[in-house]
Length: 606
Image (tube, rainbow, N blue to C red; front, top):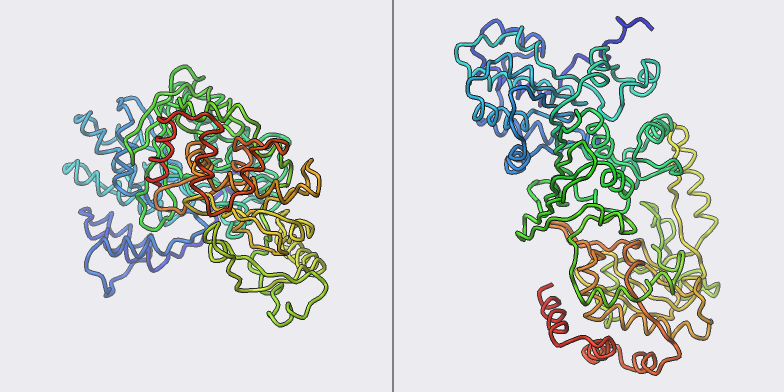
């Protein structure tokens, strides 16, 4: 292919939101010819507007961004936290690979000028590099930077020449440079990286890569579904994804981390503001890869500074060399901090990033097996996964009452149906276990996705019929507490509830109910609520409903001895005798008064 043909293939039109904001910004440009150039480039023209302050224009623009771009612009308080970690050097080069409208680089310029007040304008702009997939945001970043320079260097000429000197490029940072032009044509039909950008990605090395990467999920109900060519590219091109993974749960920020580390000089630093999903099971392989190969300087947790984002955030600071020194882990919401040898996290089954607990209660409990030892494999799992097709399986209550097939059951719906372990289930709908309908709808989904070039193994599912027809426990997936309820009724549930079934266990069928009642008593106890928090089974983030992941639940320490008298003492108690059950557990484990008090005080604080 002719290199000259490798030009950006995007429309020359700009959105009304962009134009309104560009007009407002351009009014501050002092150089008349440069202002004319901007108006001609963006096809701007005079018109009335309904806004009086520039913050209204910014808000209007940010809210207009396509959610598929994953853009959540960095608030000032987070900018300060990131920039404070940078050590300014006159020779340093800085890259923001998801620059957005340039807020992070504006804060960086302030710090550079504070520490290097005599730096020339050319030296300053030559140290700054930026990428973004959103052309309009990138152009606003350029205008922001140039207006900042106009303010700082009043005698400098801010013109088209300086505009064209800015090393700000439209590109997809999840695509590495070695792939080649032909692949890029197929990968992104909207534009193609110029040779300049490809060379920069391949040859340039940076002292700092800083960013608030876009958050785009490539799996799940509300995800951006991946065409097969993209999925295969990511699986083959990114080192953090193990070879055995065929359809991993991927997110754009994961690729930003690896590619950012690739572009660092040895000893350079990556500082990213990330969503708390980096601590979930889906990011296990990424965490393990980073912890194993790079020095993590610090991790800040407990942030929740975005207005339109329900989840919390975290800041990771990583140096490109092998791990040598302790990591500073800080919870900014509580003030708790700890220096930790990051190798310790590799000892955890999922490489969980957490504080090291010097806790005698947990040490005692770790002498036991995990729940998964007694309830292996799929014994604990989600229930129905019906996406937005639930209504097709629902039936009227009258049909349920006349049914004698056993395939129509009451349908539990998360916290609405299970609010407390000692309260009865609330039933709002009834559902039919219709395996033929499930297979037909799944096949329709598969064909629709394949027509779009998307390979996605996610299908709707009802789960095994046997688990709904057997005695079982239902467990709330999202709650401040462990809420577990035993039932022998035939019930189905949506995916907001987990089900624990003994059908895959080694227990005899006649023992199932007793084992489940015992398990319910323990899991609803104060000890298990305490452990669920201390072991991050209940993941409680600022601004986000607490979540319980099934993988974490399976790892809780547990013990069952169905031959012991204590087993029968527990199951013979009424479930509402919670305090007595707690006392029996404390006594059985020989907990000291101090340990009991720690548990009791902690539970009261939850």
